Amino acid sequence: MTIAQFPTFINYISAQLLWITALFVFGAFCLSLAGVWLSKKIAEKYKILDDPKARPDKLQHKPIPFLGGSGFALVCTVLISLLWLINKYDWFNLGDFLNQNLYYPFRLYWIIIAIFILLVGGFLDDKFTLSSKWLMTYIFTAIFIAVFGGGLKIEVFSYPFDIFLPTFGYLPQVLAFVWILLCVSATKFLDGADGLASTAGLIALLSIASVSLFQNVYQPLIFLFALIWASGIVAFLGFNFPNAKVYLGEAGSEIIGFVIGVLAILSGAKVATATTVIGWFILDVVFVFTLRLLNKKPLFKADRTHWHHRLIDLGFSKIQVLAITALILLITAHTGLLFPTQYKVFVLLSQSIFLIIIFGITVYLGKRKVKLS
Image 1 (cartoon, rainbow, N blue to C red):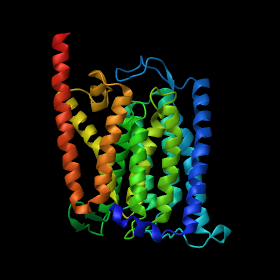
Image 2 (tube, one colour):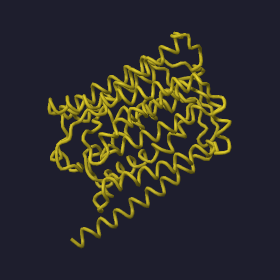
Image 3 (cartoon, one colour):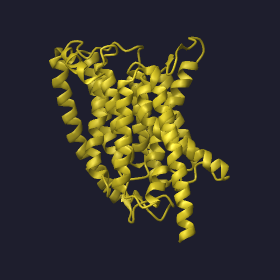
Image 4 (tube, rainbow, N blue to C red):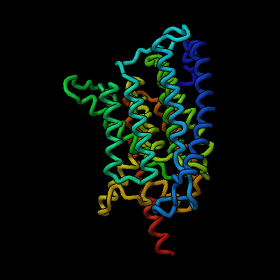
């Protein structure tokens, strides 16, 4: 969509959609502020803290409370449930203005159950530091329930080619499972610097919201879902901006990726658009895992090989790393919205090349810094 097309873009948006958007977005922001504050107090009371002495990849100098992501995630989950019920049962005689014309039916209650599994599992991990076996168990369970219970599928590849997948078997569900798992992994490993995962999630959700109101898609319900979650993240960022007073915690970082993955599928399977944002961090995870394999290191053992750790080690401040990340994501997100789907593969290729260059430069400068010290 170009700037010249914007007047046409807003002409068909109803006044009902505008006022209910304002109501829910403002409500999500205010309630999320309270939810994050309360979760911070709970984490402090029960000593659910991120101790910088526990792992080598920590950037702070003192313990910081976890559970911040749980505070806004609970609020947003309640609000999207309420919104779904308002639309489904036509409460307040609002009519079908939210337009449930999704490409296929989905069952929201299974997706909400999956979110609660991530909330509980993430809480236990923050409190007791679960092994990778238990970590993957609850994440896989949550995604499995969302995909097969919630009816999530990826049935067509228009990225980069228009390919309709076979309707028999479970291939569409398996692809949906893999996609959501990649999103969860990206935001989980991204949560290594103040404001990083939440900023990436915010930009991705705003991109999905924009796509959901395109005339060839027009999914107002998904638009509102994305804005509710984006508003919750904005409230959290007030506590998480460098230097952070509270962290997302495992549940928060995982749920951001989970929501992005699910909404990208529901908004007409706009996985390509979400990939222009979250793909940067999926590539980062792939590169880091490759480096660990080449160096014969455990895949899930924390280290400082993620690109934001490398930038910090080279002398960049937390705010500078966040600003660089936000700028890159805004450029790729805007490009992804303007380009037709079949060309978005070039955005991902550009990201790959740029990330390889960053890795190469940081490796070289890191080795040079060691020699000079």
